[in-house]
Amino acid sequence: MRRQTNTPAGLSAIYSEGINLAEWQRPSATAVRGFASELVRHKPNFSLCQILPADVDAEALAALIPDTNKTLKHARIAFLQDIRLLCDMYACLFDLQQIGLRMTVLNRAMCPKFHVDQVVCRLICTYFGAGTEWLPESAVNRAGPELQMATDIQCINEGHVALLKGEKWPGNAGRGIVHRSPAASASRPRLVMTLDSVM
Image 1 (spheres, rainbow, N blue to C red):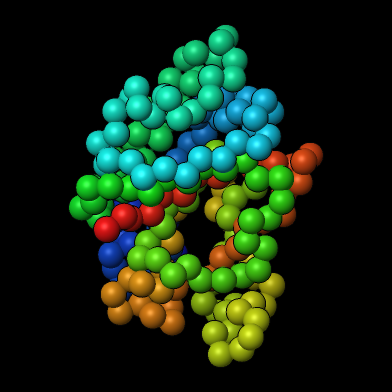
Image 2 (cartoon, rainbow, N blue to C red):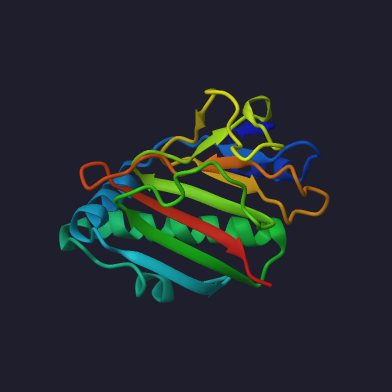
């Protein structure tokens, strides 16, 4: 079941029994999206995979993100601040000292088939392009080889922040949220960030 919220504090609903997707439906930030668009345009092969301290400082983070356009200085600052905000929120929510951050420009679907993740709980934010697709439990066939049973495909909007409960969440084996990457191409790229716990 999904829980939607208009505030970041509402993401704590992921701890509730029966909730395997919590989505912060935040308003679009023009500066953040603007920089994300430039990053996709100028760095179509950009990929970042890094273990960071939960309290990563601004300079360390800035060194990881390309400065694609000097005229977008303020947009880049807003983008970096947003990443730090989500890292801090995720770390506080799960009491983490380290976070696994991945950010990738995608020109094809990374995980095109519906699946569950073998993780505790993953944060996903699509900064540019189509958002992650997921299935409500009524559209899932967990007993069969294909998880999708119906066509009731839902989507997490661009810019929204989602927590996806995985199979490793205590007591959640066999009930992880079923999801997939949407279609992507050179003409319809995506910029996706995920955060995972690092023990």
